Length: 368
Image (tube, rainbow, N blue to C red; front, top):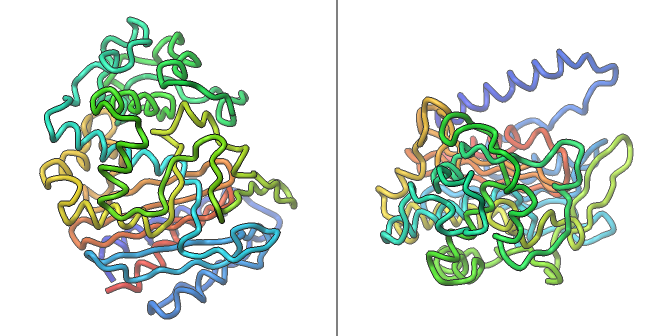
């Protein structure tokens, strides 16, 4: 077992145990399945999460070692009304979209088309003068001071359509920045979404066209696309949110928050194997040169956000690169160990699924 995986896995178990102890729940939670010891046991391991109270409809997992897919398992239903999920079943990946957007930004930086210190107003001209000091790198690292969704509002579930990212920014752009850019860390889907304007204006292409031509295509991410309004995506997993003892279905056709205003932050649909292929393409040099990858996976403001790289989270002094999401009806996580060139992704069509990290780590530990 890789030592990095063992360390993170032990930490996850400790956190979970502490959380349960503090909660003091009268009713014990279902016992998670026994972790597998060999790759052949992974499918049975995943199936152990099904059929219990609060069980997700499906889990889809992919693991790659180097350039080879070592594990590819999907269990359960893409829709509780029927229909088996497969490795090709697309899931809404919400904040995992940020990792793809970050790669696109780094490609433009590598080509000399943009600088990470460029002001965002150069590319999204609708932004007010208060954004003059906000740079691309601030948006990538959530240090710009742009607010996130207001608590208690319906902003996260908004279905309003926009003709451009500039128009979409009207929802938040006139609100004061929370702090001087680069001085604090505050997660913001609104802020990250502005990077769509950088990619479109710097490349001269629509956002999806750029991603398809320069990332999804070269990386063979064949099931990845934007969750565009009115677009039918056959076989897409339906998302569910567990509340009390009832599952409230979140139909993928109507639960897209800010479809045309937050693509760069949360608007992509993908599969576990496609997310792993992104890292295979990165490690092979297909998408970026090594110095660009190193820059992307380095904390840009270590004094303010020591684990926040450009679009990604770094842990254990760079030994682990990760990104996770807990969206409306969908949960997911990606983990990558650069030194071992080991990558894993797990997608679930349910919110919440608190065991996501430990589930993925259990499968990763079987790959030598």
